[in-house]
Amino acid sequence: MNITVIGAGNMGGAMLKGWVKAGGNTLTATAASEATLDRIRLECPSVKTSRDNVAAIRGAEVIVLAVKPWKVAEVAAEIKEAVDFRHQIIISVAANISPSELCGFFSCPSARVFYAMPNIAAEYRQSMTLLTAGEGVEEADMAIAEQLLRQLGKVMRCNGQQLSAGNMLSGCGIAYIMRFLHAMTEGGVEMGLYPNDARAIALQAMKGAVSLLEESGMHPAVAIDKVTTPGGLTIRGLNELDHAGFNSAVIRCLKAGLIDK
Image (tube, rainbow, N blue to C red; front, side, top):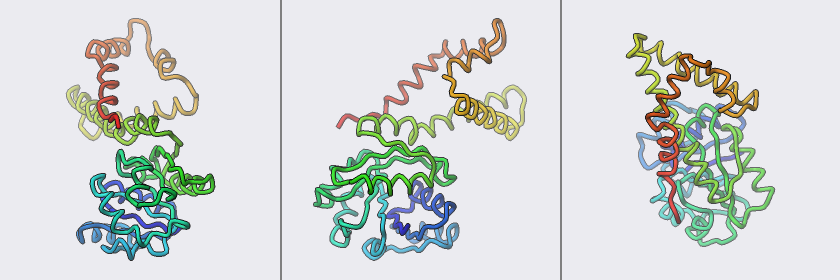
C-alpha cells in the first residue's frame, strides 16, 4: 500500500514505525520541522520524507492526517486541490474531527474519509484502533482501511458516540493504564524492591492479567474471585481500593474527556 502520513509527530510517527515493521508498504512522511523529519530518517530509513504536503500525496493510495486538530482545516485547504477524491482514501486521526467535518474542510461531501483513533502502541503493532467512516465510503473502502489499520493492532468499527467512548478507553486509556503501572512500581519500591524489579513484576502481572482474560473469556469480576481468598491478602488490597473510590475515580477519569458536539 502506498501511504502518505501528514504529520510525523508522536501519533503519526508511531503509525509509520508500525507500518515499517509490518512491511510491504511504500511510506512517505511530512512534518512541519526538519528536526522531526531528521528523526524519521534516522529511525525509519525506508520512509520518504518531505515538507511539501502537496507533493507528498501525489501517487498515494491512502492519505493519513496526523496533525493536531486545530491544523486539520489548514492542511485540508492546502492539499484539497491535489487530492484525487475518486481514488484516494483519507484517514484522519485528529481527535474529535468527525467525517462530516472533514468532508466540509475538503469541500467534497462524497470524499472517502475516515476518522480513526489508534494509540501510540501502534509502533509495536499493538494498538486498539476505533474506526468510523464518512457517508461517501463504500464497503470496499472500509475493507482497505481496516486491512491497513490491522497492521497496527486490532480494529473496531464504531459510530460517532461509540468512538468517543472508545477513544477514552484506548487512545487516552493507555495513559491511564501507564499511570496505574507507575503507581504499582512506586508501591513496590516503597516495599523494598529495586525500581527495575518492581517495574518488571508489575508489567508481567499486567500481561498475565490481559492474557488470562483474553484466552479464557472470563469477566474480570469472575477472575478476581479466583485470586481472592477469604481473609487473604488480595481482599485487603481490593478493599483499600474501594475505600479510596478506585472504581469511581476510573469512571470519572474516562468520562472527563467526553465532549458533547
